[in-house]
Image (cartoon, rainbow, N blue to C red):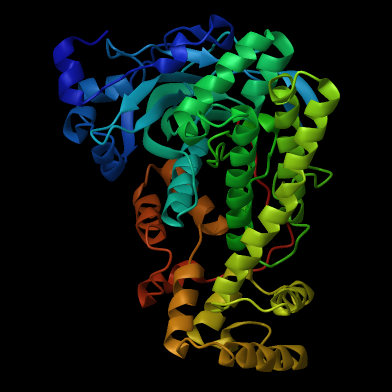
Length: 491
């Protein structure tokens, strides 16, 4: 345990409201101490925004805290219980390799979960060791910070420390612990756990807690639980549309990986699409393409239906009426998600107003991109910078015709051409965390102890809309490979 001075110097300001819920939702326990923790990377700007002292946390005592060897005295470490549909199959789950250290209250009065990922076995480890490999934790750090820079709601990464111990998967790997920051870790799966293993009153208590924490505006509404459901649907419709707009593929959209707050969570087998193809799958375990890029909106709707089922007793005392209310709410998700996506696509093409034919214009472009395996990000970058020769579509008869239609569409706007270009520049990232660049950084770090490649990558990814010449190496495509790129959960 740390003393009060350690707590003050580090800047920890915990409240731990989740631990005041019924004990069925969690198990209180401390991390398992590690042999010789070493700080690998630390997010100074995030630490500052959280009200933490970066110098203290980068000291030996601070690193011991980030490894779970020393616990701030106001923290209440706990493993959260939850359930979930994994690839469509319902399972009892829980934090098998994660512990919630506490809820940090920032100087601005905001509340954020501070969670350790890889701190050892928990009640819910189900035979696992509760540990994590260095490559997987660095991967989450890179991708989550890239998503933050893209202005997409996401959990974030405060630090990664190595443990001085090995973890064993297919091979022996260096162990590591990531400190994750989130609005909360309340998931659709948390509500599924409550609905399946708790009383209706405990479900109500969880719902009231979540409303107060994330949706306080609906507390005074007549049917607060319907409004709660509707607000979660709206946030997920916005989030999934943002994923689609940048070509992000989550890879494992199980219900335990969908947060009620509307943040992206769990960066295991995720990746960004290169060549546009709605059937793109990277995850090694998604053999049927359930969570392919083009399926993500449908899968999000499926997950939200499972969420709505957990709220049925709260929506109406008559079950048939409750089901009708829930179905009406869920039916709005496809429309909202599509509307958000189409609005985003208009922005990506520099379109400010709305015309009925806009969707056909977008779909025609995507169809060409699919046909000619055009790179998703670089195609929109080329359109933004008026460098059409940099896309494989250049010179194609279909593209020439489409380009004429697009220019005519832009010409029907009142806004200046420069305004359209500015809109495109702010909507189309010039760089994303390319899979080959991420792998290059991880290999240098894990195999050679060289973290400079990752640090440079993170620096470039922090300004995805800069469109600067210095980024050229990072939007270059990888050499063609006969082997498809695969990602792994890393559990």
